Image 1: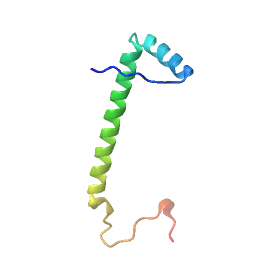
Image 2: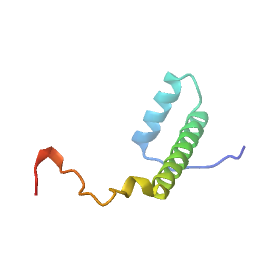
Image 3: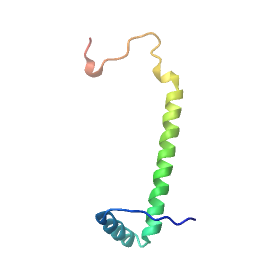
Length: 74
């Protein structure tokens, strides 16, 4: 593991200290866990978007008109 120095607003530091205490952990560990969760979420989102874009079947209406929302016909 590596150590880093970060700069945050006073109000953010106050919040993270309280949140760490509430979770019975250190500020360092809490921030590290939050960054890991963010990284994993972003990676999962990117994979899902890439898979969706590669799935051309969702764009094929078979030559038929796409349905209109709310039952309106245009």
